[in-house]
Image (tube, rainbow, N blue to C red; front, side, top):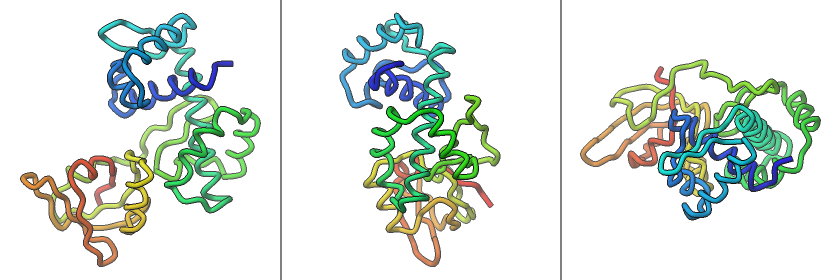
Length: 221
């Protein structure tokens, strides 16, 4: 079985690729994702290549092999189901579950994960709105069209369906502001010059910088 470090690298390569819609992920982008030096990343990518889990090309980047992608999806499935399980059964908040899932995803068996999946009713998304891979290793496709909150025009009605910026501080800010998955609101202002988006949610006005609003995916209504 791949080590904890190898699994983290495989999952991160997959997630960055999905987020940027590029199969080849640069060394620098991966280093930023993992919070390590580019030199450390380069060393591990050579290890992944030797194990035929990834194809690494110096100065270009890394791409998961079929074998590597299969394992990465399996780890991602574990992570997202564990997050949802902790929210649904232990009432942990969405800003608390990421770190717990990071530790647990490497220890649980596929049998336990399948049991959790069945217990939860085969959910399609985790607490942050991220899609949960199927037991067959398939990544669900979006059932609805979404756009970034920062790209919405003034007057647009929306429903929040996914949060891609999952830092604990940002998630707590969203919770305190009433911006949780499924909430509906209206864009009351969107200034390109000020890089500021203002939304009305349940009679409350909330202002977000464009950088923060990029991490919120919404359905226009």
